[in-house]
Picture 1 (tube, rainbow, N blue to C red):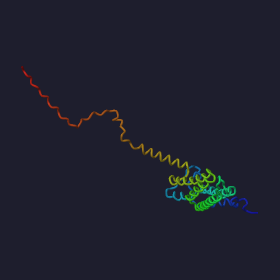
Picture 2: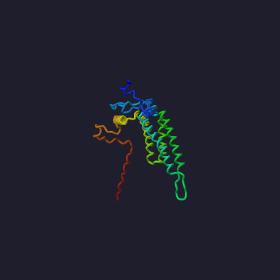
Picture 3: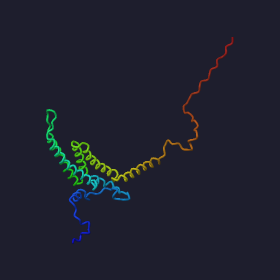
Picture 4: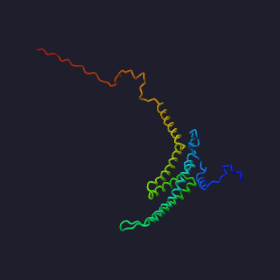
Length: 232
């Protein structure tokens, strides 16, 4: 009998778990998140370490990107194959339009973008992965309409998290809200500490100042001449 029967860690992993571990392993530094600290005291990355965290992907981001690329690969094969089998030639009045070559060409472009996305995901290149997802989303809008925007949203989500890392040093929403509140309160305290120049002091607010003498010189009026009386 095997001595490792009671040890759960010695169980062989499935091929899907190995593939997921290869793309979302611990080779890249993890960004501070709420799951790392149950007390919601998330560590903030210093400015010197933010650039490295922005350029790479953490395990959660790698899982979402891997799922999107796998789905895009399956759809990039199935959808063009279905269009090619069912709509080889489309008739519009007297003219005929061949649909199969366009579908094959677009399917080839999608598969090429998927291969490029897998390579970028393997190297943990955030910008390149997001760029491939953007292009895949625009390519799928020609096939399945608004569903293709799901890939665009995932790419935008990756870039949004990179922007948060650059500005706040974390992707945790609660930590970002605390930083925003602290910055706002700091600005309020610094703004109220300075006295306003136009404010009146209580001692001089109720008293009325006497009018000051005008410095303008006004000459005296000339004396009126007396007219002598005439006698008849």
